[in-house]
Image 1 (tube, helix red, strand yellow):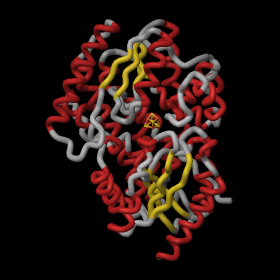
Image 2 (cartoon, helix red, strand yellow):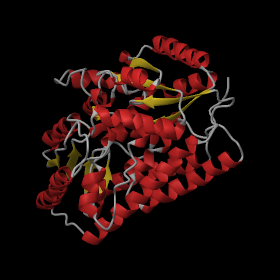
Image 3 (cartoon, helix red, strand yellow):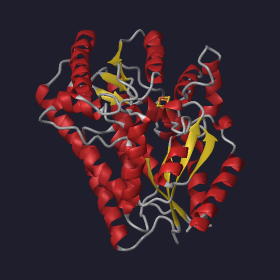
Image 4 (cartoon, helix red, strand yellow):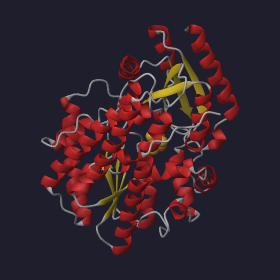
Length: 410
Ligand code: SF4
């Protein structure tokens, strides 16, 4: 069995992530600085510029999934009325909290629980579930929950969209100040937005090393190395990390090191990862000599519109231009652009049962990609966290048949 190749930078990433969790835990224990919860594509830059340390529950929920604890805790949230059909990040996270469990206890000595925040801040650009999720904790702890109500299914992003969302950002800053006493530092906002933009540029460069043939990086590596872009963007630490990672990947490219030895096929992964099966999936594709070279998911933390010189409008644009906010015509065009960039042979659509927002195979998009552009696809049924929705045998059979079909086409 071929082995998954490890980047040396992974060690540094573990330290970056550990420092992140300890910084938050220390803040909670000391009562300062204040702690804010933030959705993964929410206004992290604004919160940092207001002096908060920022915690991302989706990252915690993904750790629950990756450590295969999620499925055990989902029923506890179902029992209090949160359906098994809704986001399994939400249900796993709330269920684990109800049972007094967090995987952080095992990973980071001394951390006993998720951090109680001073404020919870969401952006519904990705889904409504994040607001419901944060509202549950807000009621539980009697903590303010504030946010941005985004547009959905957007075609062209217009000035009207930007004006509306930028206005919401400014009102949000005022509401957070009223609710918590935190004050916005405008210079810090410009600096943080600029740092975040730099992080986004570096992360994009990291992902685009996979345009090389053979690729030094796969989707499965990306899901691990994206951690700092999610939880530390807007800080110098994240940027230092990606400079290190990028340098190593460039070395691999120069030395001809491939993530998948004997790379025969290149695939685009559309949809959420199956967190509890990352290793198995990575090994399956290694065995099939197929590299999953790109994904919408990892690309979601590229925010090319951010601009420190125009923080409000650029944040509004960056958090509205996201793939997940856009209509199918945009998505079709996006897949084509990614094909031009990464030279993939076909697309795997993951139909994640509890996340319709990241499952783009339900309204004929894969079929249009095939009929109009000749791009073959396969759909696998699964979920991000609830492994009861995933039939591994069925997925393997479908993926093996798909890769064989790609060989025949060639
Ligand atoms: S986008 Fe999907 S996975 Fe993410 S929080 Fe929303 S429903 Fe959950």
